[in-house]
Length: 344
Image 1 (tube, one colour):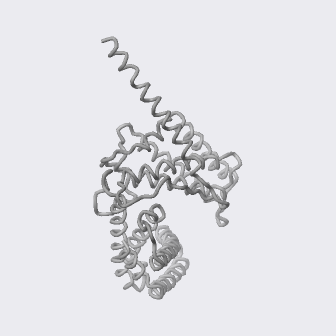
Image 2: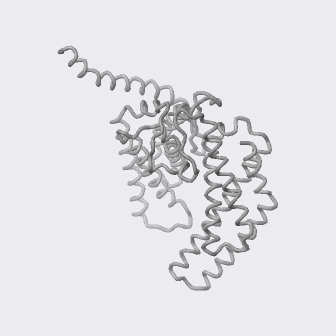
Image 3: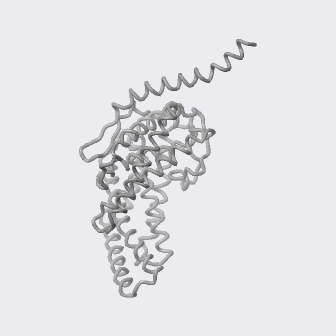
């Protein structure tokens, strides 16, 4: 009885020591896989190739730990001398890690709320970095106190997050051991799976097939909405804006998925598919620029701004919409979407 009691007391400490050992070895292995280019953009080298037989849990083990390590390296950007122009690369790194936590949420239990707390930390850091980065825009006017407040909030978050990770030195172990057959439901995680019309993959589902099916749903939906909005002569009405936003959402979701999983979705991208990707990426840029104008127009409408200002902006939106439709036809955006759907 005494021996059994002692074993039960010692076992948690052994498990903790083992998790710390594995985490330390993994950190030493992963850190050299993280790189940063001259523009401040972070990148990683994945430990191995993904095959069509690898599961969703296998892919999680390959991708999340190395991006988690990259995000810790990125924290050094948020120092007392950081400027708004400096944070773009680090902020993008935080977003990528948060996106991956969303994508692979089904294979990580939240019984100890670790997944939720990690995701919340990344969400907060990404938003604070964005708020500070906004001050780099030359069209934004602000006082010096606002600049200092936003920078200090970002620095405070960085210190808090680093302390959080250090006090929980089993996080890397947790990320390295997703459930092989997990189907956990995280209601907050809707970025990729919320509008897919299907249940997220489980840990033992095939990774490539699951992500290709998601991309196919996004492209099919995008083509449906594109057919609808190409019939519009203007897009200022609420109904027309809704359909436009539906189209933009599907294109944006597909490009986000491609940026994360290009090597999984298209192991060998042929020239036609590569050209189609470029067309979709540029369409996303055009759609984003028009969306900025729509947001301004809606703000004018809500605040009852003078009619002349609203009328001028409405004319600009109509012109941009006409140009966008012409661009879609001359570059065969519908054909580009179909090319990628066929490739999948």
